[in-house]
Image (cartoon, rainbow, N blue to C red; front, side, top):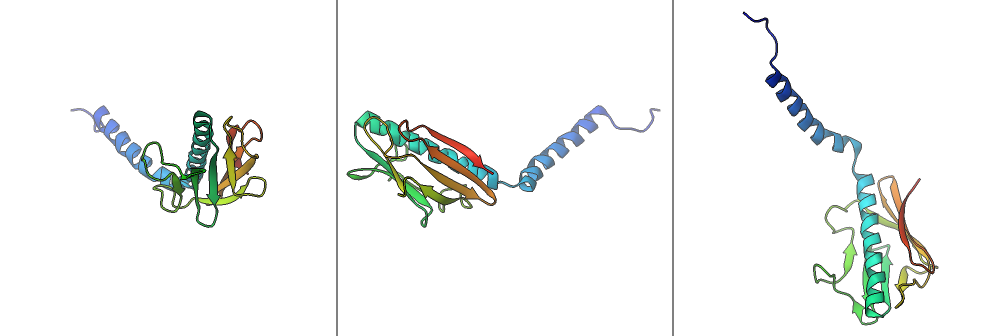
Length: 157
């Protein structure tokens, strides 16, 4: 008779159960506010780059206007708000209603004292500036470089 013990299959099953439990518990223990703030910052970067590219392609001025109190922003031209290229709805992003970004807020906007940046037909911004996005104790800053319009994101310590 074999001595009592565990088979390899039983050990593997226990490891699989532990891995599944860890996969469910660890993200909740770590918190998601950092990921939400970082994701929101990357959405803003993508939308600013889209506005810049759209200005070049259409040879028109395209603006991105931020509303800190409404926790939202929109992309527009002289005629009004643009249509989003995928959803075909008004190109407006509201972090209070956008799925997955409920705890994210636009903490500060500074484009030469104005809450907007306008890209000209060459893709150059009207002025450089920053947008700070916060969730919990985590803040990310989106920066638009003057003259070149290069858009970057960084963690704010």
